[in-house]
Length: 488
Ligand code: URP
Ligand code: ZN
Ligand code: ZN
Ligand code: ZN
Image (cartoon, rainbow, N blue to C red; front, side, top):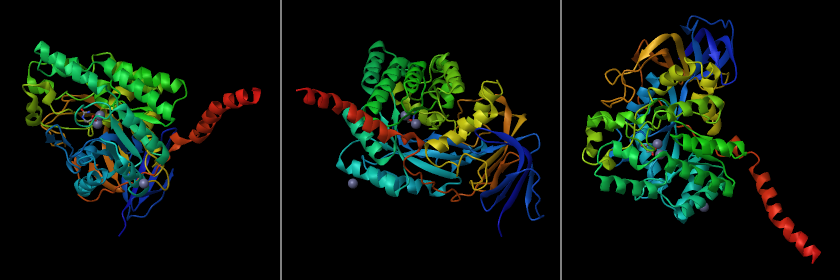
């Protein structure tokens, strides 16, 4: 028997328009979107009058079951995804970390970890070293494995960090494959120096995390990555934009016509660093992530940039640890596992902060939480849209209902939550994943193994016009030479 669903009378929202309509779903696919759809009584009907019917959220930036800083993130592909679904996110893109530099071994490990998935997911791949083997593996990832984005770390000296020479090789390879280069933009050498200063000053607590890696180091690395991507003429995606300094570099680049995408994360948009000075170690340590959550003011500036289109989509960098894991750094902030939660909270916190406050429209919300991510990673309109033919990943949000966030009631395995106590308006009442109702009446009905791996093809719209620009650049180099020769 096939599963049939009718969502009746809601306001259907896409990235650029909304209308009151019914949505009819069969076997995991949206079949029709129009008013007054008539169906038989074998169809489950959901009343959405007065509510918003939107594409499920797509989180472009998560770390589930990641081995990192001497431990492993507390949420795996089941608990992290279950949490996501309870918060209205129906797809995420996770970062595969290579094993001893091997992309193939890294992917195998993540294929294993993701077998218990209960929602759709895709992969980015981190590049942590460079040689002929890695270069060839990148081709395989793009041409055979459905990965179209690679993250380069300019920080985490001694583990993930790569230098500018390798970064350029990686950028060139991305360009030749039609894959999107992503950067973690902090100057890792300067961070190392900053940490040495903290040691000299005897600062070992969580506040040292922020003091050792100020916004200038993020601004410098962002500018450098942008200039080097422009030198290669390939698009660039800056992950977790946390500061005004980084945001302004992105703004400048975009104004000059460069294809640069800026991804703020929820923690950077709504939190500030004051927690890091809390006398209780765990309270402070749970806010440690990199780049750091900044001083008050950066959060509001990032919100403004998001509302003005300077930044294009919102992720979470969900990388959750419990308090026992955070306690690894009790004597030394450098050993606190870096990362905060967000996969379950993103849709709610963003609605409350940006839509409820009037900073963005409901259609903007869909663009920033879902559609733009699908477009950038080249899976639109299969994902990121409510329209006939798209996957039935759908949420029903009630703008008049309220939500409250607490570690006591969240679905993550962590015992802490950086949004603890947050109350707001706009609640995801129903989540539909692959045509099945997985979240309703505050209850999850998730099935391990039901999530599908979504292959992401290379060459998104970001690559339009790049060949032309290259040809123009080449002829501009040759023209003066020709002129000089013919004059001689
Ligand atoms: O602190 C963070 N951001 N942890 C996750 C790894 C990364 O850099 O994205
Ligand atoms: Zn090859
Ligand atoms: Zn990062
Ligand atoms: Zn991350």
